[in-house]
Structures are given as structure tokens and as C-alpha cells.
Length: 348
Image 1 (cartoon, rainbow, N blue to C red):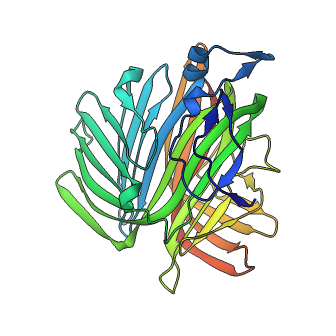
Image 2: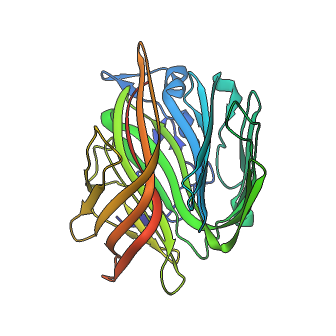
Image 3: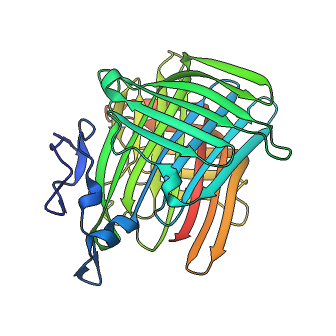
């Protein structure tokens, strides 16, 4: 895909201005004004807005830890999770909450927008300040049962002079639009779990940002993988790849590699793994682009099946080995870079 100049607004008169990948993030992310169709009929605006699912997710990779959290507004409910992994001991702490939809605030845009989720001893705040080349977040989650408290203060350095983000509007089943902003950046901060504080600086910390605003079809599934690490020259190397809900993969996809801020588009992947045991090794390959083996060390998972709502979610975490080739033809060795994969089926 070629990068396009970013339009002033995402939607005009209920229709997406232009699909594709763009050079800079949208200033006016008014995707909620898009009108969607069902069975050939254009749906009322309130129905379209109800079908829009939104989230912002941060994953932080540092030599000793992995730390991640998300704020999700699915319109019929709000959801947030936060988990911490001690990479040296394998110990994991996870907190999550389900709440009424008004509890989750997801930023309209990342230039100067804010996210928040505060509910029952659980408080996450995100300030997006892309105009200032940064994002900051605070986490304050009380202990619950045998799960210790988590507190964190983190900063992400997203400098558009140094890194090209993936800014993409693609098409899902039924011509429904999907917007995502993804990027891998330096990060710094501290995380305190059960009284023990872990600190990391921007020379070693990596943040992977995933912003999503998508009119998902009622039934959907996807496979996803991402990782980050530093090569022997100290360059930040990261990858994002997925397969599933996007039916126009010949035109639009989110399969990219970042090397020192430079983004290359990759080929479409195949995911080979055992659905009955997601902790066995995964193989993720794309012809002429990358060949990866993922070794899980553990997983986050969840299953909900309540009438018309269903979610079967698995997110193993672990290490990647293999090779990835950038758009200049340079082959990069992937040597135990840390990351996650995901397998998700949903009705919502």
C-alpha cells in the first residue's frame, strides 16, 4: 500500500472520505458520523453509533517485565483489563472490570484526547498529547482478593519526525469501515505491584499502541500478533500482523514492520496453531515477508456466552524467533523478541 495524504475529516455526509493508509493521524476522527448498511438498508444514526466498538490499548515491553492495559467501550457495556508479568519469575497479576458503557471514555483522537475508566477500586487515565509528541497514563488499581494492587505512571514518546505510525481506514464485511492507529515507540515509566517497583527508561522500554474504532459485524473473529525488541545496533524493531475480519485484504491490511521508526508493509500471514492448546508453539508466516515461531510462556483468556453475546478470547504472551524482511529487502533477525498473539471469536 502507498501512504496517502490525510484528509481534513474522516467522514463527510455519512460516508468515509477515503479508504487506505495515511501519512499522519487524522485530526478529526468523526467516524461515529458514518452510516452503515444492514441487508442493503442504511441504518439510522443511533444504530450506527451503537455498532461502533472503540478501544485504546497500551502494551509495554521492558527487559524485566511486560505490562499492558486497555479501555474498551462496546456500547452495550464497558470493559477494561490491566495485567503485569514478571518476565524473570513468570508471575502474573491481572485485574479487569465490566461496567456500564458510560464508565469507559475512549479519546476521540490522539492529538489531544483523553481516555478514562474509573469503577470499583479501578482507575486508569490516558492523556493523548501527540501535538507534544507524547502520551501519558496513570494506573491505580486496589488489591482484590489474592491479587495485589497495581500502580503505574508511564510516558510514551510518539515523535512523528522519528516514527511512521500505521494510520488505516479499511473495509470489513458489509462495507463497514474500520479505523486503527498502531505504532511502536520508546517508553519510560514505573510500575509498582504488591509493593515492588519496576522502572524502565526510554532507551530500553517499548510501547505498542493500538487504537481501534470499528463497526464490527455481529459475528467476527481474528488472529493477531505483535512484538517489539532492540536489534544488536540498538534499533527498535517491532511487528504487527493480523488476519480475520478484514475481507478486503488485497487492498487494506495492518501487516507492518517498524525498524528504527521506518514502517514497511508486509504480506498477508497464515497462522498455524492448536486451538485446543494455544500454549503450544505458533507459526506465523507470510511469503517473502516473514517467518516466525512464537513460544508461549502463559496466557490471558476469557469466555463469555450469554444469549446473543459471546466472546472466546485467548491472548498468549511469550517470545518470537525468525526473520522479517523490510521494503528495502533487508532481512532482520528476530531473536527472542517479546510479544503477544491473540485468537478471538465474538458475537456482539
